[in-house]
Image 1: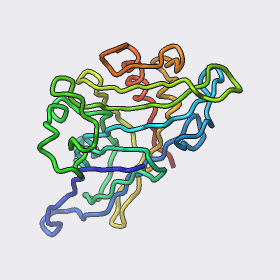
Image 2 (image 1 turned 90 degrees about the vertical axis):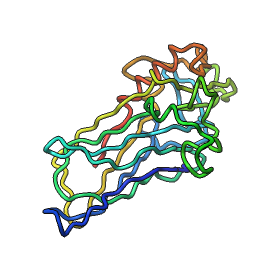
Image 3 (image 1 turned 180 degrees about the vertical axis):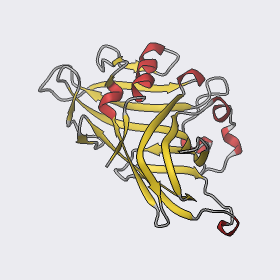
Length: 241
């Protein structure tokens, strides 16, 4: 996974406050129905047992915040672009106040302000740059979540039917809130380990994406497909021990 993030960290002088600064690392692993996710291998089956493989997975996670026990918010990262062209972890490293935190907040896609950005205004290494190949047009704006691959037409056959889903538009931005149980950052720092189940994105609480019968949506066409995909994402992330 190639990850490009715009990171924030606390820069206040700890000598003038009643807290210390400590390191925080957030990592993300990805699986499909409990099995480690690997690109370009037909190791997975859909809801009726047809083998499939993923050949492109690329998406934005933005507006990362930790919520303190007093309700205040600490910004961690503005926007991250995840590109699963290899199997590395997503890792965010930052520093922030020690203390107790109760929730992790982040968004799938880009909020209306970020989505209205002009990609030509960013250097090529920026997650919102035109060089990232995530921008449609000035009217359609950014692609939030891109999933492509091949699925078999029946079980025990080779995946050869193409599927392709690109979500976008302000209405498909989704905010995700995850509770942190007894989470305290002391002076030595802390780690938050996240997991995304891609299987729940395809077959989740909001509905099932039929990779054969409903194989294509780039948001303008067959909008209901990427809307279901976006709603499924809300339950696809969890915090692991």
